[in-house]
Amino acid sequence: MADGMTLQGMYDLQDIALRGATPPTNLYLALVASTPDKNTDTLSDLTEIAAGNGYTSGGYQLNRDTTDWPSLVKGTSDVTATLKDLLFTASGGAMPPSGTGATYAVLTTDGATVADRKVWAYWALGTTRTVVDGQALKITNARLKLQEPSS
Image (cartoon, rainbow, N blue to C red; front, side):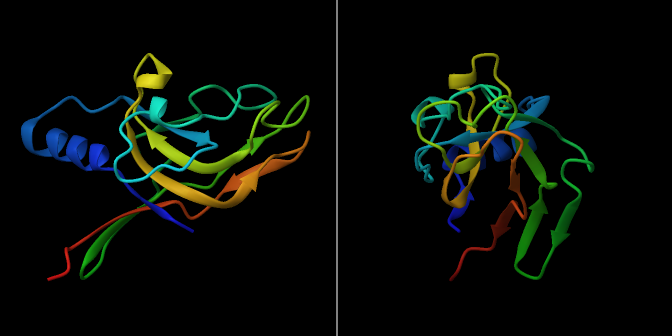
């Protein structure tokens, strides 16, 4: 599974930690049908799945706390934060209700305009995912890992 942080995410985290920029109140996990990479800046750079039948535009709201981020581990050469397991349950029809299914989950900031939310990280879902009514797409083991650069 391909995953990673964007340069925008790295920039924002340093801006918050080192220069006192205001952090987002919440974060969001959005489902997209396109492929993010390190150069993805905002959600408008990607194709979010269609809203409806259990999926809300902008994705699932996350708190910046130990409930939504239960594990933070400092290793010998990396630091890993793990997101709690999340369920996106289809209700009233397939999710997404139209268009292509989700291929990636992306971590975004909480800007009022969904398309302008900054993308901080991304996780591949393995295959394109469409969920039928009553079933769920489960996001597990989504981890943010920062590691020391190789020499």
